[in-house]
Image 1: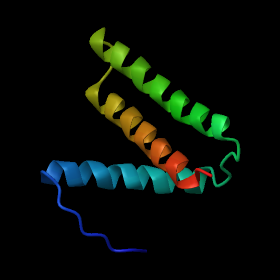
Image 2: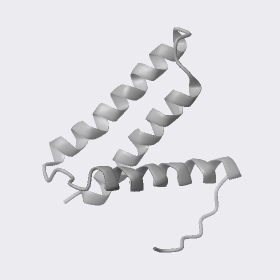
Image 3: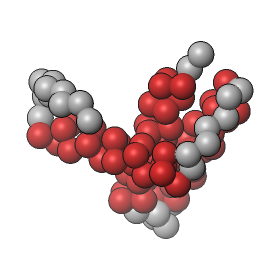
Length: 88
């Protein structure tokens, strides 16, 4: 594990980054095999982004929740990071 010190605008920013990194770690444990094909990797990112869009739509219709949207956005961000890490 590497210790990293960064300056953030607020404590809220730090919490968001930590939650995204926790999501990334959990995803790597749950799905240790990551596609080698870049299109498939980005398809995973897009799948998560699509779920975020669905949750945003539900929220706008009064059927969803901010918490569900936050979860989907964290998952999308985590997959973006994973795609960046594995880019060849």
